[in-house]
Amino acid sequence: PPARPRRALLAAAVDNWPARIYVAVVAAALGTFLYAVLLSPDPGFAGIWPLLAAAPLSFLAAAVSLPAEFGLPWMSTLVFTAGIVLAGLVNAVLIGRLTRRIGGPAARG
Image (cartoon, rainbow, N blue to C red):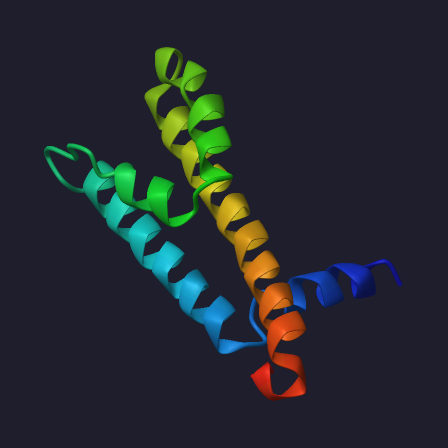
């Protein structure tokens, strides 16, 4: 089935502690951003934290969401959030694979 390669690929994002901690940091930064944008009267620079947490791939999300700012404002938030999620997921997979390679069998969850 085609779901197996994707599942095996994404398993690296959650099967060891460094990758799990990274996913938690990105999720907390993204949650803070969404709270500030959707519920706070003045979000300020709330987008900085998820941008830095999921860097360097998150800079692509910021570049793609910028043109949406001139159209529908909610579209910019949606595109930015999706970009941060994807960037964080790719980074978590890379961290997980690096942890496996460096640590060997003892580094697994």
